[in-house]
Length: 209
Image (cartoon, rainbow, N blue to C red):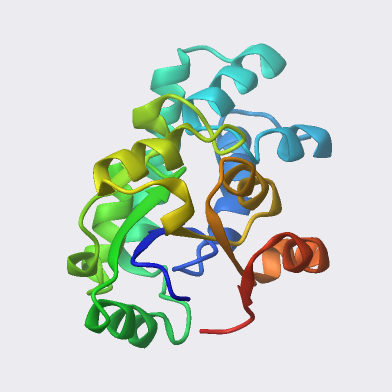
């Protein structure tokens, strides 16, 4: 990667958290008395922010509360994992150190809320590598739209073509690519079925850090 700027996704790219996220919706809905969760619901929420997912749950399962209150409850379920046991992917620390040594300016753009992302990356010791964290919640759009990448680029002060976006999810990588960013596809087991497509889309790929 020869770019001077980099935007990193967090979940599935920097940290091995996707198994926790896969269980989150089911864990939360089960706690609210929803025993059977249609698979299509779990697919539909993948590109959504937490609040957007919560709004869908409200409509689909007639839950009490608001999208904001449900999102807060779901965040609370995940918080203990981010603070205690979600690990870095193997090799990430050395990779970030090498980029930093080369003068690459880095940030994180994540669907995960900024407090949770900060808590996780601080615990794992890599938070100082990044100039800032930016969440889809803050910009008000999931990664099926380029808003979070464009907002990060503006803060970095660089055009899209000079910035590498690291993503494991095909839909997010496609969004970044269409917005003019240089895309680095990162393998994650949770998105393994899309690896060939991601490899064809990306400008370069990382099977393992």
